[in-house]
Length: 183
Image (cartoon, one colour):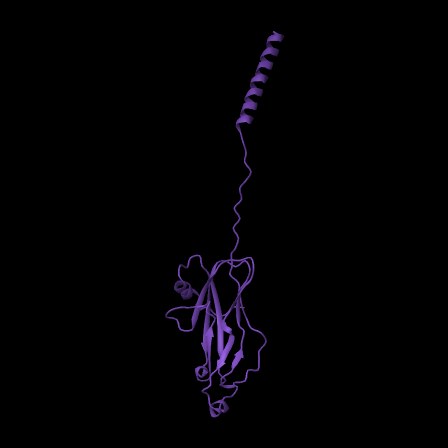
């Protein structure tokens, strides 16, 4: 009887061992997969060298070097440039934008370009050859009437928005054109 009990116990232990080993053998575990979501961004900078004392001398060129930089790591974007002139600008001066900027039809003074993401900063000229032309037509009398309050001026504002979700520059411009300048 003692031998029978021992045989039954050994048989039970062997059966439980085989069942446990089979169960363990049929189970598997995988390493977890983690999805990490990061934030994309478009960072731009508008800059120019130190201000110059530009005298309006008829039929000369003034050196002006404004630049727009799309910072490294920025997403693919639409980059816009809005050019605004003082009321009297055309009387005294003229300029050309760099030919790499495309005029945005139906939006006077607005230009754009597509910029692909890059690991490096991408800097773009604004004015062709970095120059503004003083016309030959202003008279000495017209020039004498100019004061600090009414000197002709030319200002630039840059805007950018990611290209994803904006199929055309027109749709993208509608999104960004009313943004206030944010530091």
